[in-house]
Image (cartoon, rainbow over all chains, first blue to last red; front, side, top):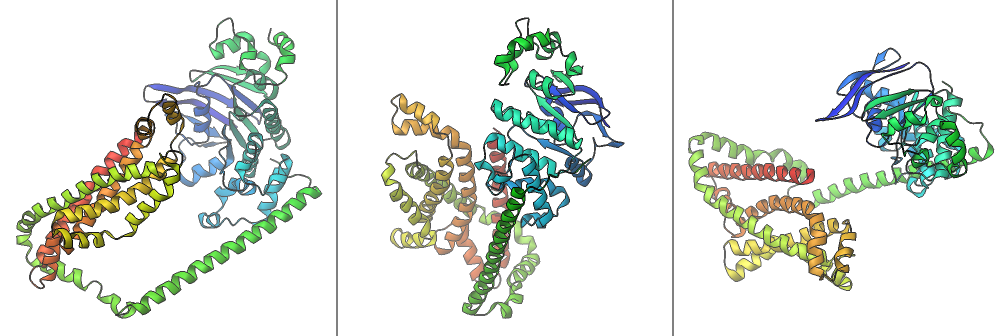
Length: 270
Length: 287
């Protein structure tokens, strides 16, 4: 389905993404973990074609999207929605307008300039907001919402694109543990109910373990782990994070339950 | 891939209805605004046309007559063009000189005025309106009026033009500088104040480093505008290339080739300084 082959991105001397290869044969929820600077964000940005790869290829279905330009590229971008750490909504516009931005690829520039969207799409936008539990905020300005609500608006914008893949770049890194859980639950539900592929950059191990079907570990731009979360032992995690023997999983955690569950987690990873 | 729909509960339906009502209201307002805008454009044009001595519709096809004359005469005497360019180059230098001096002096005064009239930075916060109105006055009086008065008092020459443009520049740059300074980060200023620094010290060390690139970029833009302004003031007796241009254009037949040479010089100057300043501005913004 999705095939990443020898993808490399270098900025001058520095190689941010180094010969990354993986293959996804059916829609699943994938977590990419690694410490900051490991190349996770760059990888997602290349997959969405916001940045260009230095070499390698991305193939979805039978289509090579690595070199797509113009309308073909924008078409691809509308099929793989992106969610950002800082939400990246338009702050001065209302929530529904922000969600309707998900349809921009199908709309003409002139119609969007006057903010003219068909009525059924407005209905659909509010339905998606309802599904994520924030419909009552529909007419508010996006910047009047809390971080967790804004991230759900961003997810609604992504769903409005009706994408086959959702790329989430550190979706919970700016959120408190409560909101982080709500957002991760929403992403998991989207995968389970709609059958969309979700690829999320996470920097915490426990989130990846809890929500993902497959974990890819990156270190210095290279893939150093690729497999089911059960295979992610403490040794493997040490390797991904480049930490010494004093590495403890709680150090990477933002989960609420961690304090209560510290004991059980250690059992899990032993 | 299933659709992203939800069992339409009553509350969702209610939200949809009220949001659509909101959208309809907004569209009505938008349409009204557009209609008023078009109405104002059309009526404004009609009024301007009525007041016009000649009338737009009867005169617009003659607009190109003057440039055509200039071109044809300059083309006939094209052999003399290099000599004319050389002849008027010294007066171009004079014009640029006026622009440089007035931009420097105006920017300096504008800098002080802007810091004195920015909320959060001002030395005397209560005097902010005073300094703002002062800048408004500087901008409101056309520089050509100031120049005419000063030429009457001080006699013709570059000094009155320089003062007139510097006054206007102080007002215009003061406003732009103040808008930039308003967005600057106050934390370094607080830090410096906490050490017992004076107002001038904390402005110089806390604010200027942050805003310098933007200030310089605005000052360079103003410099380009001032080149044109000093050329225009030459028409009213301030010397420089404007004085030569008014002579070449006004003395009627026979000197249009020299007018063309002056236009070329002015054009070249603007292009030159535009290139130089955009290069510098790029360098500054890229760090």
